[in-house]
Amino acid sequence: MKQEIQSVAIRLFSEHGYGSVTLPMIAKVCGCKPSDVYKHFRTKGDIVHTLRAEGFKRLSDSLQECAFGNDPQERLIRFGRIYLQFALSEPDLFILMFNLGGRLSRAEVASGSMPEASFPLFRQIVREVMVTGLFGETDFETVLFGLWSVAHGMACLLIGERYKEVHGEVNADWLIERVLRFAARQLF
Image 1: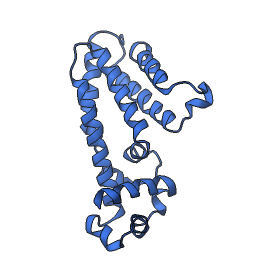
Image 2 (image 1 turned 120 degrees about the vertical axis):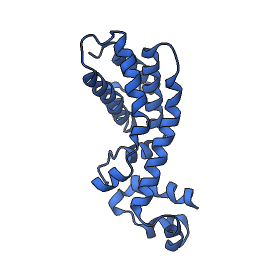
Image 3 (image 1 turned 90 degrees about the vertical axis):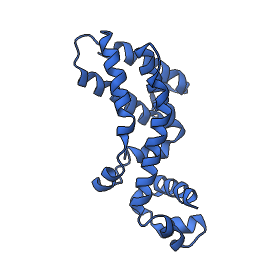
Image 4 (image 1 turned 180 degrees about the vertical axis):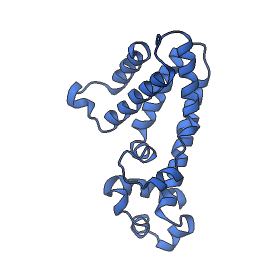
């Protein structure tokens, strides 16, 4: 029942906006009583926290394969590829995890903020790439923020298929690969 509640909640948040969804509405769509929902979640914020925590854990788990390998540049590209594939395979969850819809209060965002699970690995890989001299004299924080901005911005464009407005019916996987390779070599 808990998984069904979460699945219904994320779909309703996406379709109606976080502020419009209530626990009784979630119960109705699940085909249960509101008291059944309250057994698992006291508030709508509890559902959001659980969804975000699980989303960041799944993302972090899938990114762990990037911890291994001899070529830091290839690991960086693989990290970006996995990050973007996660965003495309779980767009509603990705939007909720990063509060892209701006629907959550600051307290709700802070209570479910778990990106620290994967960001240290990203930071480590970027440091290793910097040691190779690939980004020249550019400071670490600029490279880190720049690369994260490229991947995160690309995720947003891919989720909403906004890239099609400029590129037409180009294959998303092809575009991801090209942009990640460009960013890992030529961004700075």
